[in-house]
Length: 218
Image 1 (cartoon, rainbow, N blue to C red):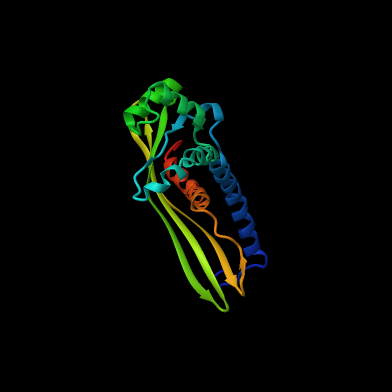
Image 2: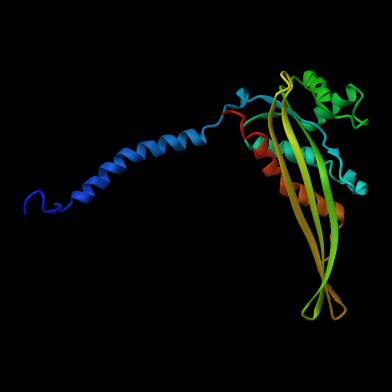
C-alpha cells in the first residue's frame, strides 16, 4: 500500500512510546526532586507557638486544652518549613515580661516574646468551641454509651518584624470513648472527658499546622 493508505509499520507505535518515555521520565524526576526538596534546617525561620486562648463556652474544660501548644509545635516541626522554640523557653519569656498568668496573649505580647527569644515568626491561636456529649442507645441485647468530644481551633502565623499575616487556619478535632452493658456485665469503660479532649486535640493539629505554613518557602 502507498503512504496514504493508513498502513502503520510494525513496531512504529512501540517506537513512539519509547521516545515519549525518554522525554517524560526526566521531567517527572525533576518534578519529584523539586517537590521533595526541603529547606536546610539552619535556613528555616525561627517561630514560637504562643499559649492558645480559650474562648469556648465550656469554661470547665479550659485547663484541659493546654497541651495544644506542645502538639502544634511538634506538628509544625514535621512540616520541615520552620524551626520552633520549645515551650519551656516560651513560658519563661512570658514569665519574664509578667504576662504568663494574665491571659493577654496578643500580637504585642508575641512581639516582646519573639524579641527575647530571637524568633521571627509567632503562632497565635484560640480554642473557639469544645463540646462533650454522652449518647446512649440500644444495640441488640446491649446498651451502649458513647462519649463524644469535638474541639474547634483557629490560629494564625505572624511575621513579628513586619506584622504581616503569613498564614491562618481552622481545624476541628474529634474523638470518642465507648462502653457497653449487657447481662449485668460491662465491656469497655468511658474515658474521662479530659483524656478524650487530648485525643481530639491530636486529631486537629496536623491540619492546622499544614494550613499555617502553606505559603512558607514558596
